[in-house]
Image (cartoon, rainbow, N blue to C red; front, side, top):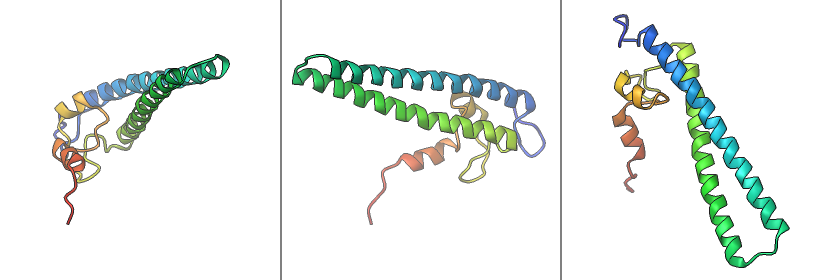
Length: 130
């Protein structure tokens, strides 16, 4: 759904993406808040009850997994916020790296995408040491 002017996404597509991003933003905010609340609960329970070292290890493992999920969600939330800003700025749908048009199919799957699939693969590829 590309506008014929400068290959920009058309208005309907942009509005649909804005709505998807707004919903995604709220989901990520809710998930992050739930993980933080669970973390506080686990920390509080640990200090109030007698416990075994194994219990502490399990709780630490749960906290670490929760932290990893929360970190990932916060990173994605930041990307969603950037995408909403790019819609407002008129740069949504274009790579932040090269300026190339990001295909609508990719934006449908990952509305907060900041680059093309090839650029993302290049960023994730292991670096060769010289």
